Length: 180
Image (tube, rainbow, N blue to C red; front, side, top):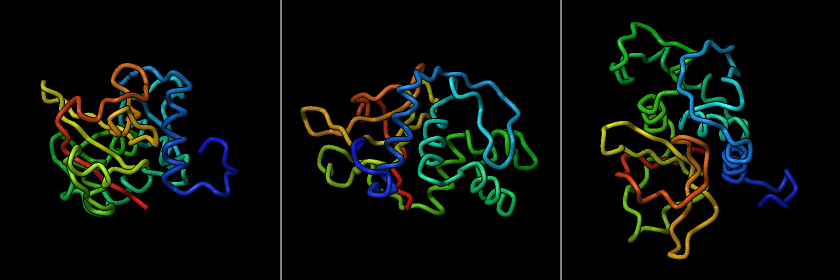
């Protein structure tokens, strides 16, 4: 995919390449609250969280999740999870929260299977996956175009440093979405 001319790349290809850019830059995990521009804002390129992998991957494909999620939250705030103690949307952080991304994709993307082994054909590169860790924390990643020996897709995510690895089955999957 990296060798194809840009004009021949599909949306999902661009998403994967954007996510892979996080790995190439060695992005370190840092979830600090940082004020950013709106729209098109971003935290410094060398830091981020799991959701920043998704945000930057989609931005590489021409989709600004900061703008889309914030606009939807402005119009439909009550439809989004009310677990952060906020009384209004925050364009600095809303798109960087797993629960908000999941709600956005539930509303505007295609909700897909959570099963892997018996439904491998339903997992495509560029899909977004969400997990819950054993301690209750939520996590996000992008499905890669690469697979392990068993045919299970690798995932691009950031749980300390951005990596592309065989982590799809490592944690409980709670969301799987495709956005076109």
